[in-house]
Image (tube, rainbow, N blue to C red; front, side, top):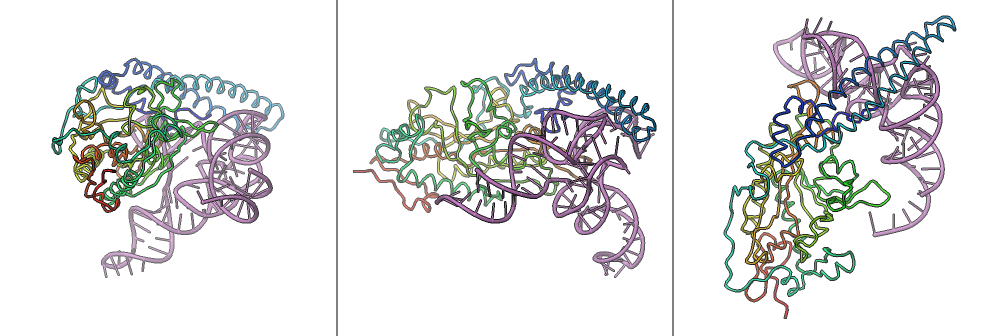
Length: 441
RNA sequence: GGAGAGGUGGCAGAGUGGUCGAAUGCGUCGGUCUCGAAAACCGAUAUGGGUGCAAGCCCAUCGAGGGUUCGAAUCCCUCCCUCUCCGCCA
């Protein structure tokens, strides 16, 4: 029978957890995750190992009997073999049934254990412990009262939220006029920046199978509709993706790379769909939090010794992209308690948004995570090298180059003029085809 | 969507009930030869797990899942995918 926990399905290796139980438990505590699954994983894994060994011994006996069958001369001898073998077969079936249960128990506890945490990541239980590790630019001071992006969109005829609601519901929108051009310009700018840095441009599907979503660390089958973030397509095993991280990561599912082909760097374009469950009532106006947006995502597969450096590289590209846009932003090093399950370390870029809050606030525009082998384990993405026998799991990293709606919010609010017009950032002008979005009369 | 064919190791491609984890070719790696290289020749070369100091041995895997059988790559069922032809379509 096929084991549920095949190579590559656990998130953290059960053997790793057993050997590092103290560290894993401490990490769970730091991350606000319950620690009891650690004990259970160890117990269930012990039981699993016992059963696997028993099964393997029993199967060896049965195989041996089968081999003797063709040498059996008399019908009686054959009958005797047949009987013994059938008994062993039933024994194996019993072991398999137990294994199935134990593996189910093991897996359901294993998925509750988050990735380990980078030693340099800030310690803390919630977002208040996140630290600012870099600052670029100063929030702009206005000598007039700046509008928020919703007001700007209205005044300049850049978006139609009412039509979005009519056609698809709350938190959908139509981009119009220069906003539509700006989105295309942002896409071009971000992709070209990443391509110049050696990233392979990719346009991915906007849908993916449940198993791929789960491999990346999403939970499309979350039974709780108040926390499920993912749209599913009725009567299929497909979901609308929440980010191209899902499709880019899934692209090499079940592959084994030769070390010489790593690292692989991709920059992907996709639409992203999020139910925003649990965020009801938050950011209900405008483009900041929407159910669908266009995003350019960077993704890398690499050997473990390169993942820290590539994480810094992706962060550097994100900084470069936002510096190029002339926006003020800072970089957050996310604390342990605020990290999602798959991330080992995560940086967020937050850009200054003058229309946010009472007098402007920083708002998240990009995010980059080093997921080490958490995703590759679940997706079965490995590499081989002359330096060791067998295969090892690659590390995966992801980072936003541009999330169009968030970038649009920051650009519109920061580049607005006293006369109601909005200047187009210089790097985008080639694609927008103009310098200014003029106030409508 | 309809009809047909097919999914086997890094690739190509044999294999229709046990001697098959799997011929052969290509590729790759190691060696011989050579001043060096090519060619030629010799050898090695799937993955995961278990066990052992090790050589090795054992279990599982031939698209996925289930079934028949003492025994399945091989027979049966379901699903997925690919190819060819037809239809439809941006």
